[in-house]
Amino acid sequence: MNAPVTTELARPFMSYGKDERDIHKHVWELPIPTFDEANVVHLRLAVLGAAAERIAATLTINPDLHFSATRRHIRQLIEATPEGREINDIVYELIS
Image (cartoon, rainbow, N blue to C red; front, top):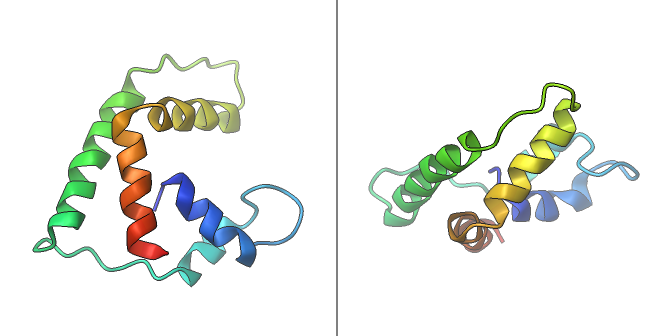
């Protein structure tokens, strides 16, 4: 759910104006499948999610930054990795 493509696909359902406005309400309009531990694609996403968590943990958090800037930096860090790109590709295939 936390892939850049999820935001892009949910954007048409969101209020006009601010980026990612009310995404928490509209992400559920997407056909996000229930996790299935027998599905190898779902298992791969779980492995990649754990890798993304480890990548995010390498970022030094600046307490002077607003939390939204910190989130943006974490997203940029993950998106720049092979794991982040693979997550986005898999999520696109699952929900588009």
